[in-house]
Image 1 (cartoon, rainbow, N blue to C red):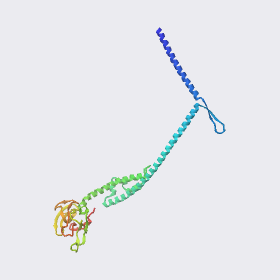
Image 2: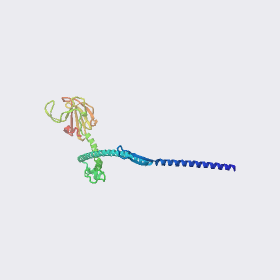
Image 3: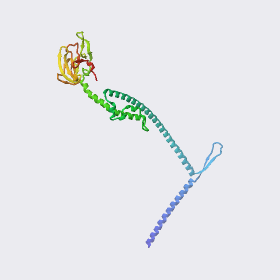
Image 4: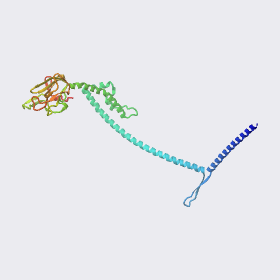
Length: 337
């Protein structure tokens, strides 16, 4: 019993102390709140005294109103400065966007000019391609209709009536041009295949300068000339090529087969090559021969060198072209490509 009474007494003491402490805390908080309210409720008198003899103007207020007014004024001032800076930044951004817009418009004008130039070039291309195809005997409409249909003609590019909503005319033009160029690939490929096939034909026809690297000059042309030794008029049956020296390489002017490597008093050392289509070429007054009878030679292959053999007045190459039994002017075949 004694112990239980002691514990109860101890508990009452603890509770009373806690209650007392809480009461002290609430009392302190209440006094603090009263002090704060009294502080903010403190009366202030603002007096405006003019330098002249005017009446003194006074305003009565309290601390709370003064602080609140100060906070409001500072907030308004801060907001004014903030929005003013934002407005200045917005003005700079608008100016920058205007400059970019001007540059964009200038670029657009330049693009339109370039587009017009491109269209004019496309017109010339269409005309040249049509003429080339006509010369080569290629039916442009039939070739392009396989993949192009009605868009194969570039004329549709310059009579555009239906333009997609919201798109520039230049955009539509470029699309039409792209479509036409894609459709033009087929006839151009046909031209390429035709030229490739004809390349072999050109290689079989004597059509290049018979002195390697195209050096020298024609010292006597085909036809009626004065003989340099007899001084009599005669028919010169070939072309004379001179480099003013011996030893320069002589090349075959077409693919063929060597049928003769010989020597006589007039032509000196000479070579005759048989080509396709009944064509023969003769190379005379050579200094040396680098092929033998029966050799197969290719166009531009070295077959000998310029010399001074036979009846000559100096080192040169006498070059002839024969078709069957007829002698023809070699100048008509040189560089025929």
